[in-house]
Image (cartoon, rainbow, N blue to C red; front, side, top):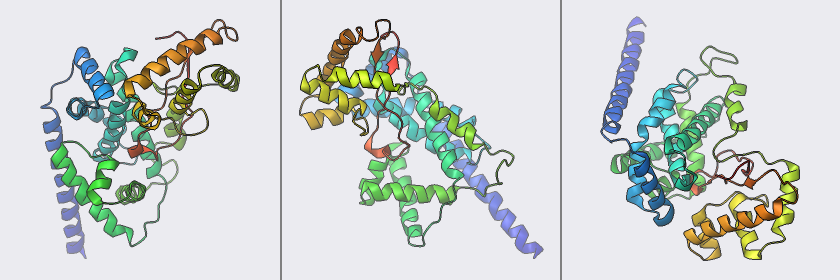
Length: 320
C-alpha cells in the first residue's frame, strides 16, 4: 500500500513539473514579443477595425499576452491553476482586440484589462458549479484538447471557439458545450462554502455589476427617452443604432455584423452611428439639458456569445 501511495505521489509530482515546464516555456515565448507604444496600438487598432487585418490582430494579441499573465496571477488560489487562469484571460484578450476602438483615446491595456478580468472571473464562477459530464462527452473533450494544442502551436496563441469549430468540423453551438465539459474536467475538488483560498461568489459577481469600458448603466427614464427620440430620426439610422446597442432586447452587434446585415461598409456604419448620436444629442437636450449620452456597446462576438449577457451599455457624461 505504501509503495502504491509513493508511486501515485511521484506521478503527481512529475505531472506538476510537466505543467510548470510548459508554463515556463510559454512565459519565455511571450516575453520575446516587444510591447507596443501608444501610437503602434492606434495604428494596429485602426487596421483591425477598418480592414480586419489578421496580421495586425495577431501582433496586438502577442504583444499583450504578458498583460494576461500579470492579471491572472492576482486570481491564484481561488479554484483554478494559473495555467487555466491564463487561458481564460486570453479569451478576454481576444474579445478586447476585436472590440478596441482607438478613437476613444484610451490605451489598449486599460481597455483590455477589464475584459481579461471578466473572463477570468466568469471562469472562476463556473468552476464552483458542479457539472455532470456524460460518458459520450469524454471523447469530445479529448478531441478538443488535441485540436486546441495543434491550433495553439500553429497560431502562437490560444484559438477562439470559431477556430476550434472549424478544426473539429463541429457546429459552434456544440463546441461551446464541449468547452464547458473541458472546464469541468479541469476543475479541482472544491473545499466547500467559505473554504480557504476560494473566492466567495459575491466577490466574483461584484465586478460584473461595476462600470466597465463597454458597460454604462442606463436607467429606465433615459431608455424611454432614447426610444422616443429614435422614432424622430431616419429609419435606417434608427435601425443601425438599435442593432448596435441591442435596444430591442437582442444582443448588440459589432460594426462588421451590422455592415453585413445592412449591406454597407463597416466604416460607413461607424460614421452613421456617430452622426446619429450627434442628432440624438441635439434632441436630447430638450429633455436632459445638462446631460449628454453616448452609448458604448458590448462587443459580442459569435465565438464568445455564450458569456453572461449584460445590459446594453450607455454612458452619461461629457462626450469623449
